[in-house]
Each structure stands twice: as structure tokens, then as C-alpha cells.
Image (cartoon, rainbow, N blue to C red; front, side):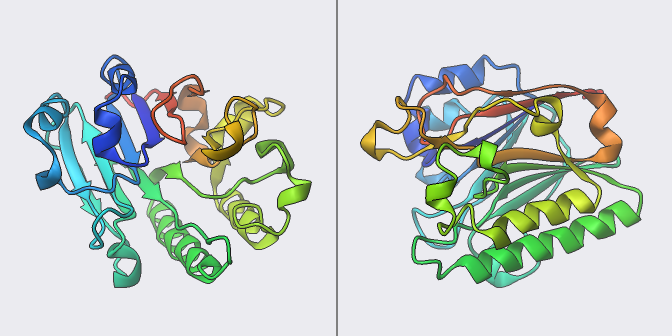
Length: 257
């Protein structure tokens, strides 16, 4: 199975760019998109036709032009669900989960703490609620793949300027500690496990030519249950793919899709 996660920063925009051709040719079995900023009825007929090869499950935000996630599957009839059961989070369209046997695959757009840090508590609560859900799934014998934009760089290796961003959301100690907590509760950051010294980013600010200068952050992850690690073939950050301020990340894993 190939799973691709990508914060597209506007689905309608990326569907009109050449980079969508990469998705169509990627052999992805599950395409997990975040920050879609659209509802299905807002897509043109041409845009809808570009999604026709997959079964789509949408979870847009209530607020127009904001947040939202979309999961696309080549296999029809999989079990899907949305949200975490709390309106303050679910109204923002941040979670879709797919059931594949005893494996739960989550498409997640974690909240941003904002530059003024006013949304950091909201972000921390989201991390906690999701982890509580995951701990229960693990307790019941399930396996989990968490994929998406975590809006946090875990270690200094995961961003170009760690010292300058010690007090910025995305690299605050309390945010990074949440990733630690997930790793302490049965998860593995599979990219960092496979490539402990590799410096590679998944997000770049639009201003100051950040991407061409290599001034980025690794914000997009696959955190997987440790029980799944031996099934992983590879994880690839496709930083050559344009079309968004984020790039796609793919996970190849033996799940007999």
C-alpha cells in the first residue's frame, strides 16, 4: 500500500496546477489531503473529474475557505469516520480515519498555534484528545497510522533555524513534548527512524524565497504504531513537488491493499 499525505493549501488551486499530475501518476492507494479550504459542491466539473479515479471522503470546515481534510481511496467501500467527537475541533474539519482491517489510518490537520500563540492551548488539547483515542485503539489491539500536517517540528534537525524559533509556535517546548508523548505511547516517527541524520523539510514560508534558500521545517509526518515498523518499505519526502507551501510525503507499507 502506498499512502500519500499532502497539505495542499487549497484543493481547488492545486487541482489546476501541474503538480496534481504527480498525484495522478503516483500509484497512491490512499491520498490524504489537508487544508483543502473547499467543499465538494465548490469544485468545477473539470476539478471533480480529476478526483474520479478515487472514492472521496470529505470533512470540510464549517467556516468557508478554511482548514478541512479529504481522503481519497482507490479501493471502494472501506470504512471511514470523521472527527474526534468534540465540536470545537470537528467544526474545523481536522480528522478523517479509514479502517483497513485492524489498521486505523488517520488523515489529520493539526491546529496552528498562531504567531501570537493564542491558539497554542487549543492545539495542545487537540493533541491530547487524539492521543487518548489512539491509546484506546492500541489497548483494543488495533494498529494506527497517523498522517498529516502536525504543525510541529520535533527536533532541531527538523527545521533550518531552531535557535531563532525557540519561542515560535511549531517549535515551542510544549509542542515538541507532545510528539515525545506520542512516541512514549507506542508510536514511531518512521521517517526519522529510517533516516536519523537526514535533513529534509516539508514546509517553506512563501516569503523571502524560503524554499529556494532551503529555509524550511519538517511539519508533515507519518507516526505509526511500533507494531507496524517491520512492514514499512520506505518513506519519501517529495520536496521537488511544487503547488503548495508544503510538499507530499509518501509511505510504502505492506498492508496487502
